[in-house]
Length: 541
Image (cartoon, rainbow, N blue to C red):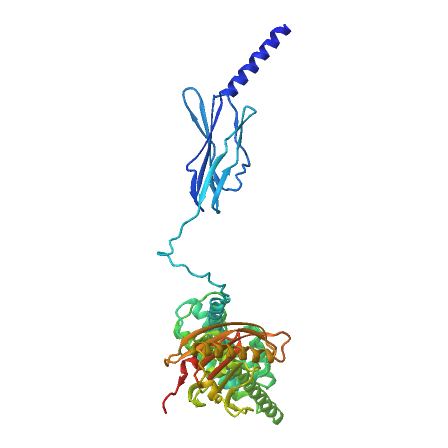
């Protein structure tokens, strides 16, 4: 029995090894030569029977190549076996000869190792006769743009101010009407309200209810203010009882017919307000005339006011007048402020946030740019230039040097114009020195003098470039420009500034125009460009 079992195990092991030997691993690439940055397709394919268990590498390593992507396993069934295929996309960014590392695939627990594949990565050949080469562009600093955000905020303010303005106008007119009504005597106010009811023609129950509410409020308020009867908080029956008591006491001599008419009006009003009754318009109109008669008769029935009462009324009127004037001032100032803010926001939307803000705050370079510019001629040969202000002559120790300036290095915008025409030594003039070499040495000396002037003033980190350009007037100049850090007064750290020096060189001497301003200034570059566009060398007088 043991011999049979051992024989069976032996047979199974032989079959397993035979099956494993029968599995075949193939490896392929679409090309052995590629260009830098081109995609390379790498394929692993296993040929095995249907019972085989195939495992491809989970984390394949293809160094020095980079793995772009891998496809899922593709299984293809044939008549006698299965094909298991897995593809990888590779890439490499350096030219040279390389090998794709061997990959391990397991079939039924046994490893199959793929062959090494040599790959040639070729560089991209550039034909410089057809394709121009350019220098690498320097880094450009991009300023943050808040224009879109500011525009949204300003439009939101416009909408909010419009809503506030409409509400303000409505409340102002309402309050104005209330104060005007409070200043009128009770009798005049009652007649004015009754006159306003003449144009009301109710046709529905709700309109009649509102009509009678206003009508009864007129008589109740008048009786409370003039006759000193608690009428607004009383019911119709309580009000009539109080009037009867005042008549019996002799303090309010109203006619019985008048009281009877008022009772009918109050009864009709209660039916309209609480029983939803709807009388004819003729009756409503008659009730209005009845209330007017009650007001007139009450006015006549009231005793003459005493001197103290008259003084109290005058004092109250004066108090109301002062209060009205005070509120008018408050409302007027509020309205003026609202209009000012609205005008400010609209002007910012039209002209821009920063120009309006800087104009109101008198930003130094904004004031210079928007001010009255002056066109003048300086030095010999004359140089015509347009500047925000007239350049001031600076006295120098050397009589042959003329210097003009605007401000100082501490100013928001500094201009320095120097004319240097020294006397020529006859021996030096007759020397055989090369003119081009002499001109180069002269330019270098000027550049060194400009740097020395900045350094002597405390500037550091001076970065400089030079260029040749032609002004709009047609005059060729040498432009020396760059940045530096200058220690301005009142600031803890040095300020990064731009400078620009224009050199007019002649055999007899030179003209140097130097400008300096803070790098973050929004208007200084516009001032600089306007000055440069105005430069003109007067050659003939």
